[in-house]
Length: 112
Length: 118
Image (tube, rainbow over the protein chains, first blue to last red):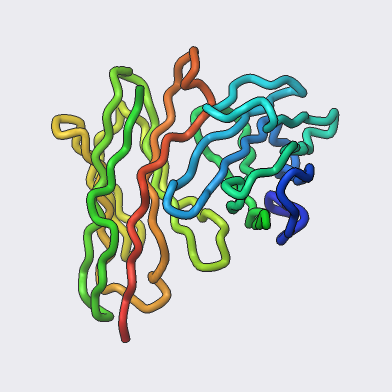
C-alpha cells in the first residue's frame, strides 16, 4: 500500500511569490491534514480537510489556504510568501479523527 | 486549550543504555488520544503508538515501552537497550475526540532530540 505522498520534495521561492504544495493520501483515507514545521517552532497545525470540505484551521493568516479534490488529494497554497514561511510542510491522512494519522515525508520550502 | 510538554530538549546516550523520554500533557477534556512519533533525518513522522484516554494499560513493543498515568497527565516513552538507529527526534502529541476548534488536529510537544552514540 502506498503511503502519503507529497510533492515537490524541495522548493525554493522568492519573497512575495505564491506556492502550491500537493498531497496524496493513503487510499481510502478521506481526511487530509497539513502541518508546518518551522525551525524552532515545532509542528503547528495548519488545515484539516475531510470529504472535500475545510473542517478546521490553525492560527495562520488567510494567505494560507487549500482545497481537497474528489479523489481526496489536497493542495496547500501559500500566497505572498514571507521569509518566515520557510519550513517543512507535512501532510497526513487518516480514516478518522481519533488518530491513526500517517504522515508523508514533507515538502521543504525555502523562501529567499 | 491543549498543551503538550516535552521537558527534555536533547538526550545523549551510549548504545545499549536505556532511555526514557518524558511527556506531560494538559487538557480539560476527558476523551483524548495520545501519540508518540519518531522523526528521522529524512523528515517523515513515523507513528509509534496511539493510546486512548480510557486505556491506562502500559504497552510494550519490542524494545519500546510506554507508561501512561492519567493521575500525573504523563505519557512517557522508554527505549530499552538503545541502538544507533534510534537516533531521531521524538514527538509526543495529543488529539481530542470532541468538537470545536480542537477537533481534528494534533497538538505536538516541542520534541526531544535523541542521539545514541556507538
